[in-house]
Image (cartoon, rainbow, N blue to C red; front, side, top):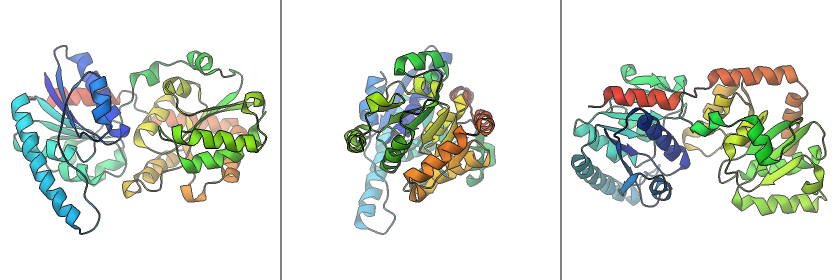
Length: 369
């Protein structure tokens, strides 16, 4: 079987693509993969390291206003469609799959025009503009949330798969996480992360949270700041005369390579509301406090978060309303209400779709030529 995968720009588009490819490879022994991305996206670094063949096209997004840059972008996009067409005709794929990002547009459009079976995977409650356009051309649309289905005209194309997560998220154990991260098994663990690059608003609010909970015997805070924010947060705590090495319940790291183990330990997560992060939380059944990134396209993170809130799996704090006092208040409400926290964990687990990657892989094999 020969597969072309396209997706890029952010890890939220790249890692799901890798997860889907690995799910297909588990079912198909003879599987040749070509990944199409851009030379400037994260995919240019990540995909070759994963061992997949990689080619690039030149494409970028449109500005949300009339401009000469948009004229130039249209020209580049037309050229990218023709280059994608040449790549596809040479590689002769059995299916072409897109997981999001501007690069998917030319690739999936070219494949559709060449009558190659195509599928897109939409991760958010509010679909991106690229996937809305592509939905008219592709054969199947895998959506991460049932609520996203209504945004696509042809319902026969849509199936609710959930969002693909790394296999390690489900195989990591609490015991492994406790040992690897140096945590206390008798304390509730609150995991705080704003994503791989961190979230400044969450980090700033956490300074007051650390001051408030330092030395508590019943909870521990595992705070992942992001590389660029780490020194500032630690420096602020030192100025507040808080020695995190002596507090006994605070661990602050710039980056966490073993996030699956942290998720296996977490009782509460303070997160942004990116689709893949939420998929991992719900697969593990973790109650969450969500602070949606306010500048996400179409405000999709808040829509993602509100679905979690509606199902009883999360508390949502808008970024503009976030401060240390508010975050302390919500954490205390959950920690002091074990029955409610347990109910949120159950609700989170019900939303989770840990089998998503295999569902998408099954559909890919069904529609491939």
